[in-house]
Amino acid sequence: MRLDYGKTFTLGLGFMAISMTWSVYNAFVPVFYERFVQSGALIGLLMITDNIMGVTLQPWVAHRSDRTWTRLGRRMPYILLGAPAGALLFALIPFHTGLWMLLVAALGMNLATGLYRAPAVALMPDITPRPVRSQANGIINLMGGAGGVAAFFIAAPLFRTAEHLPFTVTAATALLAVAVLYWRIKEPRHLAGEENARGISFTAAVRSLFQLQRRSVLYLLLAIFAWFVGHQGIEAFFTLYAINVLGVDAAAGALTLGFFAVAFLAFAVPAGFLAGRLGRKNLIRAGLTLLLLVFAAAFGVRSVQVVRVLFLVAGLAWALVNVNAYPTLVEMASDAETGTYTGLYYFFSSAAAIAGPPLMGLLRDLFGYEYLFLYAGIPLAAALLLMGRVRGGEAVAPSRGEEPAP
Image (cartoon, rainbow, N blue to C red):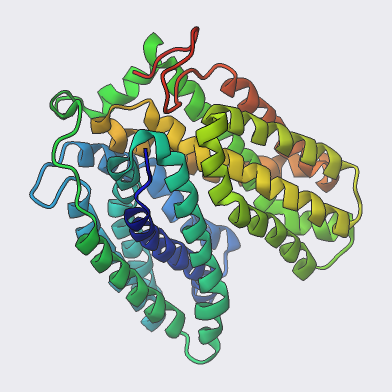
């Protein structure tokens, strides 16, 4: 079965715009907040609003999109409502004249994004045949990474010219992406299991995870939570680790994280295509094993140059894990439940983004910076053990002894 590259790249444009938006937001909105708010803790709390939406609004909206049936489709109404509103509010952020206007624009933008982000993600499995979803997700991840690069190297420098330019350029890009998405993507009208999905409440869908036949879904979601805790811990504290343990400055530490990001970007597409040959779960397990080996090696290293080489390998391993996780999860859903499962993916990954940095920070307070890679390795090891209990999730008929997808 062949991948429709035209539709996949069109959908990827949307994720490129989303990535640009959050990259610009995370880079400059704290600068605006600091002009009015002196508390770093409060600024940090305001900056995790998107993750709070990920554990509250987005799972519910994603489930509702499974039960929305209009002439526009089931995901598109949320995209056409939330994306333009989010882009316009995003563009207003730098024009604030006080704290309250800044809060209204920034928090309103987070709310609007929460309305469409998960339905937009659920479009991928809706329009992509099951056997090639990992390939599609690899391309989408590549385009999302390209959006981050565009934000940092094209949009961000415009801040020196005028503070509003990175925001207005990014908002215009997002509006253009939505227009192309609406023009090019036509959602399927009839999906397997849609009649059954209409009558299932969100709480009933969550409770179903604890049923024996869906236990693999729960194991996979817990694994996703665990490996994101490890990833978020490294991302949040590596620059401080580089300063205190490797003896370099903050810029060198941040540059070292860039090696991880570049390797992930370079290997996102191959990771998706390899899943078609080697299996999604096999690649996830291989990626987690490789990450554990890299972190074990990095624990004993005090050279930033060696760590950069190790991070190139870690980025490759992270691509194996991250590109194939979402397709594995939605493979376990019927075609009419992909929104609900997408919402659950966001719930567990966003919960990890909220819990991971404070947890790693607590371990740092107790034992010191030098054990950072061991801290991050613990949840990765737990994720690997959980993946050993996951059955199903492949695009082919399960082998003997495997639990079929529900």
